[in-house]
Amino acid sequence: MLREIYSVVVSISIYTLTTVFLVYLRLPTTRAHLLGCMGAGLVLWLSAAPKPRWYQGLAVLLGSLVVQAGLVAATGPAPSALVLLSSLTLGVVCVKAGLALLDDQALGGTKDGPLVAMIAWLFLVRLVFAASISLLPQEALHWCRAQHLSWAYVDHPGGVAWLIWASSALLGDNELAVRIGAILMAAIASLAIYRTTFRLLSGAGVSAAGDREGTWRNARHQALLAVLLFNSLPFFFGAGWFAFPDAILIAAFALAVDFGLSALVTDKAVAWIAFGLAVGLGLCGKYTMGSLILSLGLFLVVSDRRRLLTRGPWLAALAAALVFAPVVLHEATHDWATIRFQFLSRAHAKSWNLPLFVGMLFGEVGLALPFLLAALVFALKRWKQRPLGERWLAMCGLIPLAAFGLYSNVAKVKLSWPAIAFIPLLPLLVTTAPTFLRERWLHALRRVAPAFASTLLILTSLTLGLWSDTLPLPFQLPAINPRQPADWSQVAPRVAELCQEIPGPVFLVGNDEYNTAALLSFYVPALQVTSRNVFGQDGLVWNGWTDADALVGMTAIVFEDDGHYRLGDERIGRFFRNLAPVETLFVGTRNFRQILRYRIGTDYQPTPTIASAVSASSE
Image (cartoon, rainbow, N blue to C red; front, side):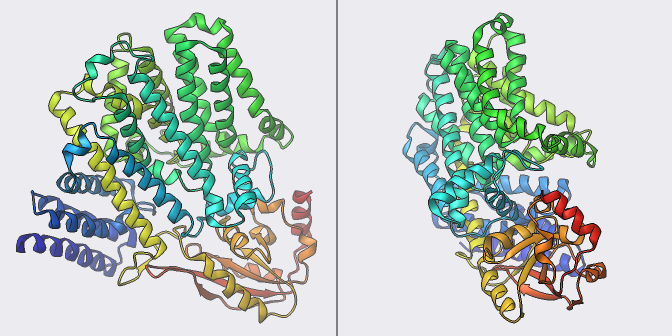
């Protein structure tokens, strides 16, 4: 018993002392947290031999608290190598602790109850914290767009804005209303993945399902396991409740993969039309949906060229074109702004390389990556011997990985772009694992997969508990990333107090790219909010939403988050008669320190050049 207590105390001490010491040496906070997390995680791993049940539970809970800062730090500007190494360490700790804590026989056998319970818990966690954690800046931006509906904006199509508009019309303007659409999309994607896996293993597209008996007992259990892995893997859990364009993309991609399987197996017109509708819907969310069109084209060329001359694929193309047509027409009348931003502007971004791309994939799916890639390689290596369904899933996963892997040598790849490849690879993994894995590795996978998913469930719940203050720390951590959640609900009364002290009309300015302006718009809706376009800089969507003439002579409160430090630029002063010194406004939580900086400027007077530019863009 003393050894167990000693290992827990030592691991937490190593984390605390390492982090404090490295911060004292002026190492960036993100790296200090990561290194402290890795040291503590290794201690827990080395001490994870079979222990009494009470210690196993304590080790998992305390160990998860130790890695909280590491999880948050992974979103910060740390080098990718450190993020990857800490993610691997965390994965090892999760698997070791989970295997020791959980009943492996119940979860690794054919009982569906534990899998259903964990899936339900993941959705419950999403619902609870979706209503209690303040919006991220990106979510607030999409809410702002929902107040100015359009088929497309400067960086994305308008699908997520329409989704938020619909949910807000039903539930009002609150955090849950903004995010409930993303949770619904995650549920739709889960049903599609379940259906795809179940159909593969129950006969559709599978030539000999009998050889899978004995290790993976039935199709329903495997389908539930695929759904559990989908909802617990890091990227898909977050995309399943944050109001990002990825929510629509993931749901549409999962549906299109499933409808595409039906179309290829049955060749029914309704299946092809459903596939096309799903593709068109996904394109309205994000243009990366186009990779599935390439997947279908290459699949037909390689496997069945004659089907290109049948009506099915062309019905699908027509259905997709009809759904996507409003976006195309909008782009044609707005100088193709979104398409130029996505395919031309980003092509000049900072170049990456393939190792960084692989490291990013680890950040999306953790230790599941080797298994998923192994399933893909197996299906491609034995292409002619595999059933049609497995070949279709392999092609749907291959194209996004190959395309963005090559593109990573030209420009920076966003985390969300290649993630869609893992949607078809999850059913492929649970379908083919008994064939390409040896018995001992299959047994390990059967034990590791539920344990890994359930431990991630615990860690995710505790992480969100820290963000929402339902699990307060005895001390505050500095905000590692200015975009991490903070309690923005406290901003509205503080801003109201500021405005009461100011005579005359007041408007608010977010003096950064869009973060502060978007959050102020959502949480302080009673006041007019604009962005740095009032200072002659690019304010993104606010360029077209600002009436410069209506602001002349008004007093402005100019805000920015804690990570930009642009308020000290005295060029801002030429737009005001008087500009007060920089002051601070606390918007952190009990667990994280975070502040807003602001300055008050009186008698706003835009220069003639700026006024004409803003007015022209608003017409």
